[in-house]
Length: 326
Image 1 (cartoon, rainbow, N blue to C red):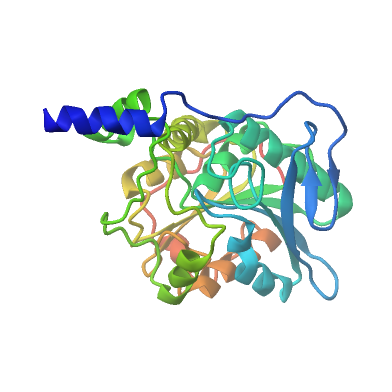
Image 2 (image 1 turned 90 degrees about the vertical axis):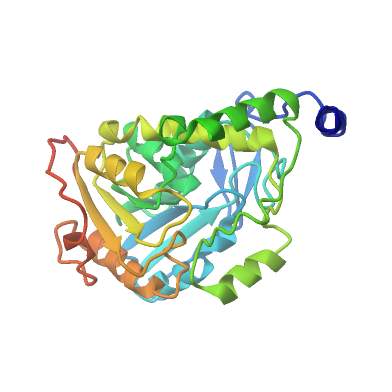
């Protein structure tokens, strides 16, 4: 009876209705400003950028992971800028300072926003190739974008993409999420005590913990939303239509290896790289420069020798037919 009473109290405190905020109807043409972008429904998405001092060799549009925001790409963006690569990162809806922080929008909204950002940024920088970079949740969005890529998109870089859908989860996790969503979609478990380590960069992790814009407690309906997104991404790699660089760390404790490598194998035109010292936050780990150098080399030439040599360490991956082009 104590457990029943606790559950009923949880339902009362959490509310009974899920709250999501997908994009509204289009009311204007999207536009890009220096520090934000305005979507077709009027939503304002904060934007950060890191531009080279000289000529721009390539453009990166960076998508952050779950509960993070555009600042995740600050150090990677500065490093790439010194190598002639411009980077843009924006707060996706529900994260950072974008509308409705802490609440899920929808997979379709996130994909449409990413396509719009690629269109806007490629129009601002005609000439250099444009690449979509996605970390974790952002990688799942990037996979879906690449299935029907905007005209201005030349390639996709996936860093530990979130392809851990329900079919790869143990039954008890699926049941727990379903039950929590049915009973208490507004409940916000903190995740403390799970003993999961996303990176070996402890100083960076401490800064994230102190950053008020990084979400610390996640609503159940948002967790259900990201699992829906992962379901879609897990089913989509074979439909990717752009050249792809797939990056994964041997110490990743967030996205399991088996669904990750299966997704990599299913992408028709890809270079897959394993980092023996890499964790989940590959471009912010202690060996981030190793990853960023591989990215820069691949963006210059998708067949180039990668400085890390990590593409020789991956499981066997036969090349597949693809109509992709650069």
